[in-house]
Amino acid sequence: MPGDPAVFIDRDGTLTEEVGYVNHPRRLRLLPGSAEALRRLNRSGLKAVMVTNQSGVARGYFSEEVLHAVNEALVSQLKAEGAYLDGLYVCLHHPTVGDPPYRAACDCRKPAPGLLTRAAGDLGLDLSRSWMVGDKISDILAGRRAGVGSILVLTGYGLGESEYRRSRWPTPPDHVAEDLLESVEWILARRAR
Ligand SMILES: [Mg+2]
Ligand SMILES: [Zn+2]
Image (cartoon, rainbow, N blue to C red):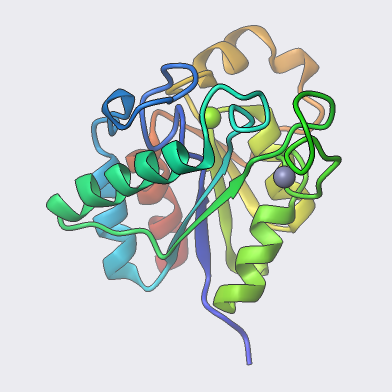
């Protein structure tokens, strides 16, 4: 039985403001339109799954407890705006920095596809009808490797990626959108055709 389609969403620079390492819940800010984007997904039947690299744990900049507190703050801010995530998946690793178990050549640090494939197994998702939205080309690559479509947003690092690094992109996204809300509108419009 085919599973549900999903939109995998990067956190920093896509769902929330890119402010560097988020080492306290109060540093977390939803980007304008993010809650509305999730409300539309929540109503549409597409699952909304956050996939984020948080190597700050491996680097010793913040603990796993702080990471969970930050993500709980995100969930409660979304809830206050009538929106939710169907899953939150985090890579805590870095291949060369810190101590084991966080220093690891893992399969989940984007551009590896492990967060997406793990979520697909857990939640019963149909990757062939799913999308990845992110502000870095590593997000786009992770999407490609998981077999989903990909959208680059111009929030976070996206504008710089798009204006200055386009000639060096190993693979282009399927679409470039202003932000998460415009990405979701584009996905839902394509789906309706
Ligand atoms: Mg990002
Ligand atoms: Zn990892």
